[in-house]
Image (cartoon, rainbow, N blue to C red; front, side):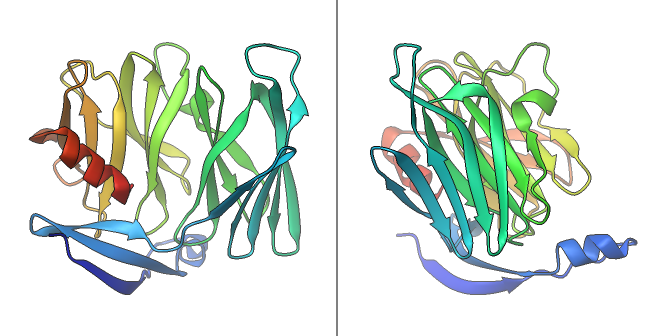
Length: 253
């Protein structure tokens, strides 16, 4: 049985630039989930979600994300969300979407409390936004990640323990790739792949940020657990996952 140990991790990053140390010196609260002699980093604090006929509201700490529903004139959905309001303490920002969404699937605040990941979607695709909670600037990951064709959807995503990186899966309904976005340097690390995986169920970080584990599908309805090491820059298969194992690990995500 998995043992869960609750601890508080204090991350102090050393950098040649003072701005970097300012950005990522905040404490990050987390749980360590032990599995097969290694531990995953799981953020302790989770946002609450309330949905009514007119609004979708996420709240965590001093941050609120509010999406107002409008009537859509484009079937099949009758709901349209074209913007979200983000309240961070006394600060207030608005993100105006260029695409039409019918829901906000999820949000995730980085362990440093400096960034917010927001996933908006509809029946066809999902988009992932990364918002700087200090100044309200934001990036649409679908638009800036390198791809040979337009990125239709971004599904699984997860913050690193130090809050500097965001791992995510992207592609289309028949193709899934993995990349890691460095929010401070605005750079990407692309995980190599040997086969054309179809989808990704989850991504989990090692508690020290040394590797990520992720479950991807190939062939159809068959998932394997992969591991990408930042030290070796290599990707390898850890094991095949049955339905029960997939569901158990997905709850950690």
